Image (cartoon, rainbow, N blue to C red):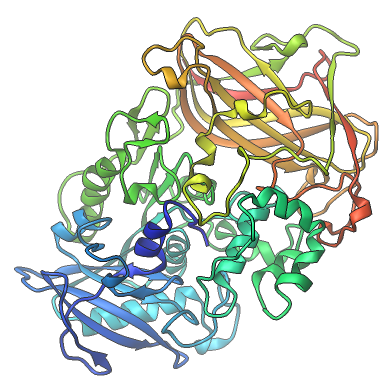
Length: 621
């Protein structure tokens, strides 16, 4: 799950096939071989779990150890394989270079049921309930692995840390649910917290269509790692021709038992999703943890802050740390100087790895002196790191950006009391694309990972996208914290999706970087399926023509709208094929919708004194 980002080569090198192949030392049930990575010796072994299942594990131990070293464990469903997967590339001279220089024993493991490990894989396996001593989950597998490592790997100092990106990050979190005494620190990087509310597969009830389908067809057909062949360069057209989601299983997944079956069987936030939500399984934490997230993460942008925020409240014992940077999913493993036309003034990824993560692990696993700040937040717009002992900033004031006539956005509330509204027609046969067409599949280039940084002017002229914009700002406006949209809206249908985007509009005259003149950069955007306006557990039909309140959480952000820029809000009712199409007719389960259920609907956004649609932001004074 959770990492369709960067070029395919980097995906294979870093995540799908963590590049590791070194020499080894003798042990029961091991294999030895050549040592292409200088400085390490390798042990390949299978570690037995409490139920007898054995997990394929590779251990990399520095050849020259002056003192006992901690263990760093990375568990993954994506497979650990030879450095030859990408000639000349080593994880120890790339993503883990700084940690390797500090000195650790590195351990990588295929989780249960994946690649060379035994057993049966279960996506986001929930914590075991009952079953006695042989009950298993990812927490028990991590416990048993750590127990074996500290007892059998010579030269370790008895301290173990875990890290990983995406699904491996989630695995490190699960290890902390019932932690082994030797587990002292974890760094979940881009971990999902809740794949229904805001990570990976659903966002506020809307199905993450392109990601969900392309992930399942990639990971869960046959041996996995099989890119789906769309037969076209434009997946927008393919998904549109697909029609209802009910066509997926019989036409493309009939012979497979995959997570798609769970998507279609559980369209609401029921027990299936709730028991897989991190914060329902682990409401507080007793292990030092460093959550890492990216502002432009297209997969798991919700999880890192959600976990930090909840654990700060429930476990306020100095264990919780947070980094949010200007990165795509896992972008801190590579170069962090820029994303497309957005330049950040420095290599933010190298700074994070060298100045933040490196000393943090050294503090918690080696006892090194020096305190790493609790929160490191990169402020986009000004390209500055902000450090604090908590985030969001405390010196902030809540303000509201109200919708007005003629597309005006203002901090002043509306005074009109009747009839103030804007309308548009949403047609499921012509949904708003989430990025410029043609939209290639997620493995064909950088388009998927970088789409959130694209210029939003590509939707200009569409009558099904409403925009409101402020005059040119006379001074900087810095937002820090949660962004909440409140729409007062009505529709002629009995269901509707509401998409809200907060946008930084660059000046038309921008000599410092002419290619950014007039650029419309999405600062934050999110969707709400209207049927879930009163809660994700139980969908409710919308009464046509009745004004209702819709609250859309645009998540948390730190951004500086600079003097001379403008602030824009856009509202639309489709974001395709990022999310599935809403038929705009209430269907108990949209996965069962028929072709004739999809219909046009007129949507009305009210902006009067009694119904003041707005976006709420926290502004630093």
